Length: 66
Image 1 (cartoon, helix red, strand yellow):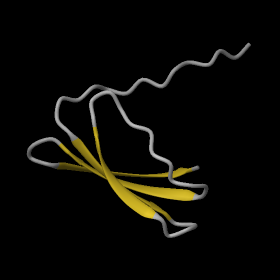
Image 2: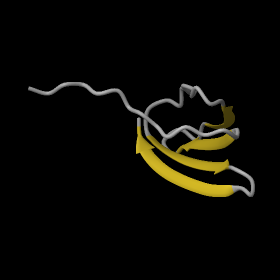
Image 3: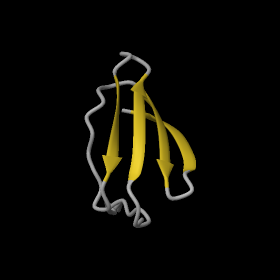
């Protein structure tokens, strides 16, 4: 039996700036993510993410399929 487990992310105390690009549609945007998290509608396709968080800023990157 499979049990759905909620996704848990590590907490953070500084704002995180995240930019995204939908490579299928060319749609893009950026947001400041609050501590409680944020849901962003990007549309279907491969989504490239870039993030800067902390001081000094630490870069992060990911690719997800939506």
